[in-house]
Amino acid sequence: MRRSKIARWGLFPAAGEAPAPRRKLNLRPIGAQLFTVGVTLFGLLVLTFVIGRMMPADPVRAIVGEDATRETYEMVFRQLGLDRPIWEQFFIYLRDVLTGNFGLSIRTGQPVIQDILHVLPATIELATFAIIIGATLGVTLGVIAAVNKDRWPDHLVRVFSLMGHSMPIFWTGMIGLLLFYAYFGWVGGSGRMESFYIGLVDDVTGFLLIDSIIAGDWEVFWSAVNHLILPASILGYSSSAYITRMTRSFMLDQINQEYITTARVKGLSSRQTIWRHAFLNIRVQLVTIVALAYGSLLEGAVLIETVFAWPGFGQYLTSNLLIGDMNAVMTCVLIVGVIFIALNLISDMLYRIFDPRTR
Image (cartoon, rainbow, N blue to C red; front, side, top):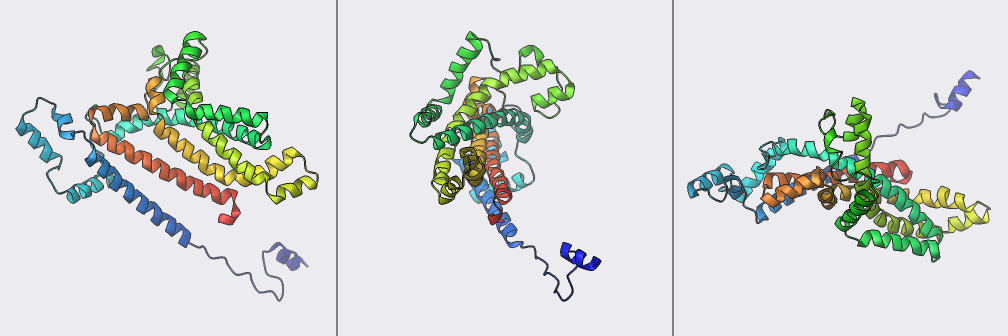
């Protein structure tokens, strides 16, 4: 009797029953995915190298200056390896990247990767709050628009998203500063915090909100939040326009399916039909949309960082591009590509969680 209960629980096979075959781990999809990532990274390195060589900026002139002699120019030209064949230059670049050597920045004189690790947390902090605002607003408005198709809420949401997609983000940022900072005084101005708080909190993680919490300095924390609200809201509004339109399209496709009609015939409420059935079936598509929007925020925060004097990745890329610092520019382009590849990998993993059919 005891053995039959254990067999029922699946610990031992019942009498006369063959043991269940062990499920083998299929490593082929994992290997294929790793191969795809490797090929993509190699293509990204080739593209980055080509961009660096095709840029009109002269890296030698940026180092030696306009008044340098011809002998000095040629010496630096040889030191950079620009006198070697193009294929040899690429393999040197590939070797340096694989060993973590991205060169020195002309502007700061420090390793480029060190500069980027210093400025990237500010952009991640800004983009993360922006995507939270954008995804929450975009998904909610997209569902409302789909449920109320061709009625006034749908028209209102479509106008709202069209404005967010059409208005230049630098113009929206300047209007926001004039209105909410200069006129009403509701939010902080430029920078990550008030100038008299700079240096009061140790740079532990690079994320100002986290560092201020670690230090227990709540004045710095609320100053950082006050300065973060406006640029994150403007970036979030810009990304919500795209998320809203895609959510509306996905929801309309699901609402017109037969299973939704069946759920309504069975007496399920409109809320249950929309959120428990239709919305659950668009989660997989939304993962990709939100991931790509987040990557675009990390890459495209250049204008908003310039308007708000935000010391982040976008402002670092812009300033180095203007002076022709190709080591910094090429590394920034490479990092943006790696971020998008990583976000796609995360999207694939979330696919397997949300949709068992893809496992």
